[in-house]
Length: 224
Image 1 (cartoon, rainbow, N blue to C red):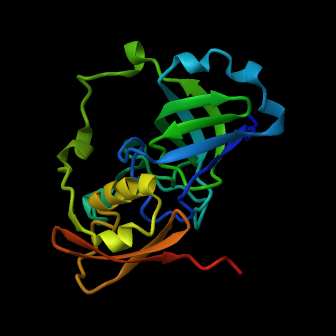
Image 2 (cartoon, rainbow, N blue to C red):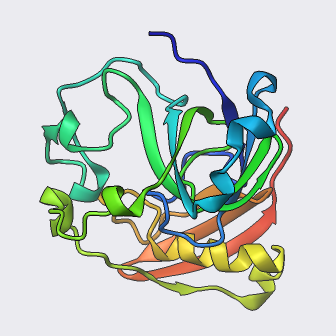
């Protein structure tokens, strides 16, 4: 079976670090899905505007190795406990495919705007399907070991002068990303300065227990 790239995603996440760990966790993370020329037809998305959410099937492109592993170490379990790869959403699987449910904001010829994607900029998309609440929503579903991971958002200290360096619509999104604690669960160094790129800026911060302090926001240097 040959997979064909039907589209790519365009957004503010130019590196893997700090991308929301699952789709829908940070509101306001708008992305554009740009269809390849072959599929850039309104006929291909006719009727999609009637759905509020869609499924994206996409490919992990930033893997250091394409080897799969029968067991993996989920970061949210501290990175030191192994579970079966098929019990996780790890990229190190036989077929490096991801699945995300996102909110559909608008439908145009050749372009979809979505909210809440957990994909890096330029990630290839292989298929799009509508989300069907009558069959896809399972309120009684069990979360396995993932249900044991308590949601523990951080308190973010961010100077308004630093936040003002971002467009107003991006400030709330950045705060939600930082509240989710983007660093690996097994990191515990209050003196370490972390950084990632977002919306064309380099974001610097530190974490001490449950307090995240925004240190700097400055324009990212262009790639050489």
